[in-house]
Image (cartoon, rainbow, N blue to C red; front, side, top):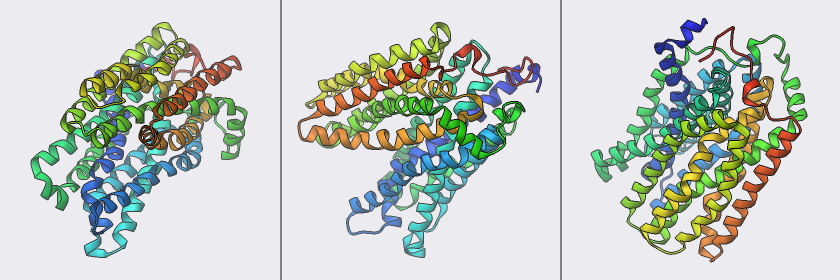
Length: 439
């Protein structure tokens, strides 16, 4: 692909839709399940108690977190050996089909327990897809960006587009509920958001077909001949994987604390006005969308490592801002979410780019996938529960201290990895795709 072909407006648009749009769609499909669970739970897990049906549906949701690191272990080496584009095409296709399946599959009243089995299988496919989508996209965007602009490009692709997908899920759920009403939503309206996600994937899939191939597979002197050699090299770079686990872990705790823990505390425990809480949460999503290119620009302008370390150190006191919301009050919640949350937003939109710099090109997807999957399962999946539980026993400070310690460790281990040469500085992260072929 020539430099002229890559730099045309049409090709740049295809790149943003294909790579960034795919990331957004993955997170839309992932999030819409949780938002719709209260409506469709009884269709697949019938019970006299709607709460029980919803909890059963959410238990299936949790399986998606468990499967992520397994997905990374299986498909990460595949992406590193055959190229990112092929895996990204499979990923978006699998996500689209599973989303469509959930939108049209028969319920318990039609096929009995087979309905729950089909739903579980579809959700596992989504977990496998999400487990490789972000790592492969993170690796690809680093190699598609031109030197001096990689941070900005990554801030948009794996920063802003992540949040756009989650925000769109909340907007579609809100609009569907407003148009159909509670009774229709509980009957069949919940299917519409799933179908929207599946159909939208066709546009993204077509755009991805035009993406250039990236990864060690395009460089004969870096391509690893076997999966065993991928794992051998992963072991050699285990310090980088450990750094990815804690870089991701510190971010995931903050993410789920601010986007799940605090809203649940406000709605369930403090009985705040739910519309106002939703408005604050939506405002926070918008902040994260805007924060992506800003954080990326800072990384390009002042140095990736320096910006990451400053933002991560600022995250430690940002955790303790949450203590301001130890009693009801929308004003206090707004200060916490839009004040301390600003630091969270910048960390959230930059961490995937940081992860990509912690792995060499030939094992980049595998290393990111393993570290990201472990961190999400261990730190992200437990954050909201631990936060609410600590608040209920009057020890919110204990959870926040734990969060700050994980965050501090992410700084220490990153500095250690950088000192040992595990961090690839921006100016020599990768070679261009071809002579002059940068975006």
